[in-house]
Image 1 (cartoon, rainbow, N blue to C red):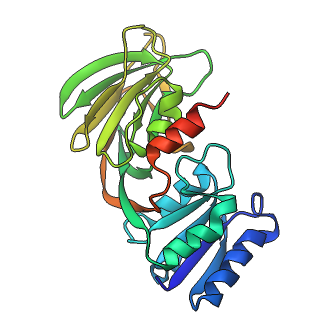
Image 2: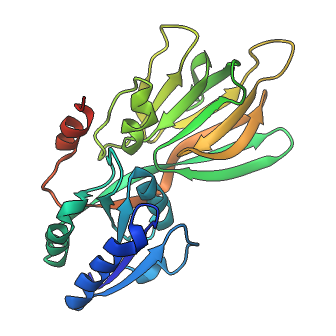
Amino acid sequence: MTNFFILSDAKKDHNFETAEEIKRYLENNRKCARIIKVPAPAGGESWADMAIVLGGDGSMIQAAKRFAGKGVPILGVNFGTLGFLTEVEKPKIRTALDSVLAGKFMVEKRMALTGRVLRKSYGEEIGLAVNEFIIGKQDFGHMITTRVYVDDELLDTYVADAILVSTPTGSTAYNLSAAGPVLAPGMEAMIITPICPHSLNKRSLVVSADAKLRIEVGRTKEQYPDEAAIRGDGQMLWTVSTGDIIWVEKADTTFDMVSLGDVSFFDKMRSKLNRD
């Protein structure tokens, strides 16, 4: 590892003080480092051997999308609250850098999702999600009806606030809040979770990462069509309505996460979810 990107947000890293400290430390160890002040347009990712991300899970998600498929592993330093995706707490930055420079780390490949929308008149669009896609109602007080197919076989029809499709990485995000199952991040699977379903017997389902999901927007009331919004990792992507179809499947590209091996996923589960 010779070239390092340091991605930092001034809202969390005041005056980029920590980023500058990391840069000096790397340069004192004969490495090259560039500070990227986010949000910043993508570019030059192929220069980096590793990206160091200062922030919380939101910062990590944006970095994962930026470096997906480029073979650049991401080391997260937690400046946020929970920090499931970050590997290092802020006080332990120097120790983590020593481990990286000594080659004492592993790289975990994580799956992402791609989404396609087939509208009756607009054709297809494509998006990438690290945590999840959500197909949900646009208006407060209205539910939407969706039919979910797994490899062209009808799974179920849901009348709910939303349908969420999550990766294992995203299983500890919105999916967890919606009472969905937590998956170990190294797994390859998708979780289908209804959000506030009208029927109490509707539960989450875990399906193979090789499955292709087709989600059709139905009609809850005969008087007017359902209007739904599609979000990827919390970002608004598309609007759809009755008759439109959303396809979700495993992405061809992965994103790479640095693991130092001193704190396991289960350690994080205990420490972060058992808070009062």
